[in-house]
Every structure is written in structure tokens, then in C-alpha cells.
Length: 143
Figure 1 (cartoon, one colour):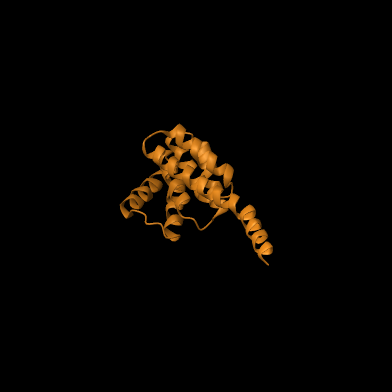
Figure 2 (cartoon, one colour):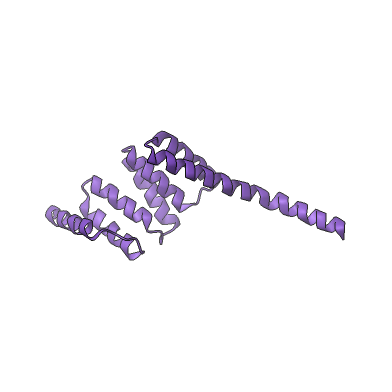
């Protein structure tokens, strides 16, 4: 019986330890990436989020974070791709809609910005009402 318990324990360790270590690595990369982004070290943040995505390639939050870095680096096409990927992976995740809205605002695409702000709001993201009014006004001017 003891041999079976030791064998079972060994199986559990071999099976689940790599996943636990990878999860910790992802968290470490994300924490470093956020700190780097906040410090304006966008190349380092990009490197950290890329490393996290290698370990967890289907995580919507990681694409959203990397999209934010691309936006800060004025790599707008890549930012849009990452926000779109995040939304595809998790359509109920509000933050990429808000982040894509901010990028559309930067680009003067106020109709798209407004649509994304409304979508983010419908998913529970708190959107500043004054900003929403300003975007709606600018969208109306462009029509």
C-alpha cells in the first residue's frame, strides 16, 4: 500500500508541478511587465508579456496587457490585433473594449470609440460619463 502511495504522489508531482511552476512564471512575467509599463520601460514590458504569452498563449488578459504596451509604443496595428485577440478569446472581458476605444480615440475614430465604450460599459466597465459625452459629440461632428 505504501508503494502505491509513493507512486501516486510521484505521479501527481510529475503531472501537476510543471503547470504550477508555469503559472508562477506567468504571474512573475505579468507583475514585471506591469511594473515596467508603469515605469515607461515599454521594451522590457513587451518582452515580459511575450514571455508570459509563450507559457499561456490563450490568455485574453495577456493580449490586453501587450496591446496596451503596443499602444504606448504607437504600434497601433499591433495594439488593435492584440485587443481583437483578447476579445475573441474572452468576449465578456470588458477591458480590451475600453482599451481599443482609447486607441480609436487617439486615432480620431470616434464612432468606433463610442461603440467600444458602450460595449465595455455593458460588460460592467465603469466608463467616465463626461468622456462618453465628449466622444459622442466628436462622433456626431464627424458624421
